[in-house]
Image 1 (cartoon, one colour):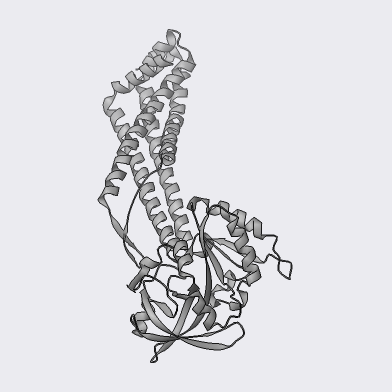
Image 2: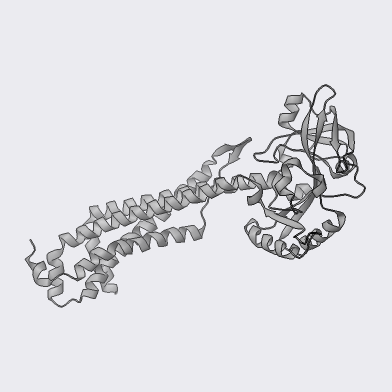
Length: 412
């Protein structure tokens, strides 16, 4: 086998220009795919991180039917204290959960004593909320980086439209689950930069203020947002939580709770899927480039060496060895192309990363692009290139191994 490798390398070096062009083409394809995967993956991760770490969380738990009616923020579908106790027990049994935050979400009227408009508010416990969505405080453009009782964080667009600023006194009016209307004065504690996506333009108040304005005798929670220690375990934890809560039934005998990943709660999951689809098609293009390049080289190699093939066949070389020789030539081209492309691709990714390029996503400005590539992707792309190289060599190699020595020696 080693001798076959030596012969294959020698034959490739006999046509150095052609070999160099083929290896270069394969390498450029590998570099392009690796760079695309790293940059698109960085953008995808940044997008997901901005959404989940700014307001959404990795997972959310609601009472059954809440999400389908979430536009109206129905207070009648809040979690009762007894139901909340069951949910918290299930969450605390999962070691992969880093933090969770209980929220009271409601819609109301926001007034600056001159104008009145609609507003969506989240009543939260500041400590739990910051642990669950750590980028929340970074969205506060003006004011203290906290949520205090008696204060409201006003969305930036609402603040501009109503001409309110930090320190102003405003009134929030809301209707509770019984239809009773109540109002409460708040001081504007901060102006909150809007995040991209549903829920990214909500205001925030302390959970005790939310319970007060909604006149809750016992605190009823709209949703529980969960943050995991490892984002990659989202689906694993989702399955476990869903399984633990599946036995809890409501009066109609149906599941009392619903668990959702961020994917089901944000339309930007479709963008993430499009990025994955684009990556898949880019990989297909790479395979096409390698297939056409290697096959072209091997077909030419067989055509130009017909008399040589006839000679080695005439002296007793078995068809299997002739087949192996050409396959090894294709394999060698794939290995060289993958190796050179990987080195250049990793170097290009490192240069882009050191350049510290920034981009804007929605209302988020100056997000740092941090492309990186993991060893699994490198190995996958390399194996794809090598496998396709061998496949591209099969037909020419088979043709060479089946040549009649007499006919081959007569070839001009």
